[in-house]
Length: 417
Image (cartoon, rainbow, N blue to C red):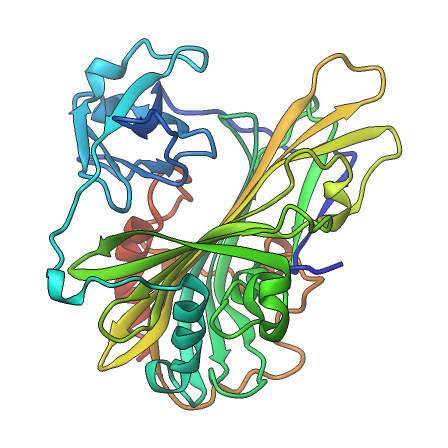
């Protein structure tokens, strides 16, 4: 079977520790296209004045726990290709999971010179973009530093385990068959289990999974290039912009005749350099009762597991004429029901990695320090705790964006140089 994402989650019976939430206001929203009503998945949600943020799920829905200190702030929703949406938090108070606040977003259209408008074959465009990898991406190893976050949650509000780490990466060249190596520099974790939790979720290989999402360096969507047209259908979508750059958008999905579980998604190709600037994808787990076997290493015999969603994003950023890995995220949701229980519980795992620095050259990562696919970051970071490194950012705040977390430790990161 073709596999796109090389990570494993383990499910075990658990008894853990206790924690309590601060006083918050919880709001629910659903981001949709204003005209079609189509849900907008992975839209970014942020509250002004604080470090509170999240993203929408596959149905465009989100919930946000906002500290009362920021309850008079502005909530903003941002989605690629759409105008940013704003409203007062107070206007969303009273929204519920059953009745979320509707957020209708309008597409942003960009004028393209008619002289360059032409019919584009999506697969040929994609192949051309890959043929330019040597020119558009580093063709030597890069020493890279990244901030990594991992969150395991039960339902929509209970955080079971939170881990953060600064990761050193020996990033391989985009030309050839080298592999990425990573090691923990600093890290920390905290758990929030109690006696009512009958299932323990452990995430194995998260950092390696984040690196394996690099589709510019890996086989395309889990299959080799010379057979890609046997497994996938491609089509052109409307061009979109990211920042001040325009991108062609090629969407793909596995062929209806392909019975194996592959994926679907979109590739964003820069219209000037033909560099791949972004990947968005979802594994096709829907309607596949045994999809969980691709992700679950171990589970209790009396537990029934159903995968709801597996989503991933990989973003690249241009600097000095080359494109570099900038950000990756991987998330999945699953339902678990124990024998003799009427209700299912929903669990989710979200991991994010944002690059903070990179420079040419090899980074020596020895065998003992290297993060292995079987490693759990929550266990590794116990050997790399350093309260002084985190400074005033002394508590993991899962509702703040990863960008805000990096800003709060940037001084400590700069002192490494």
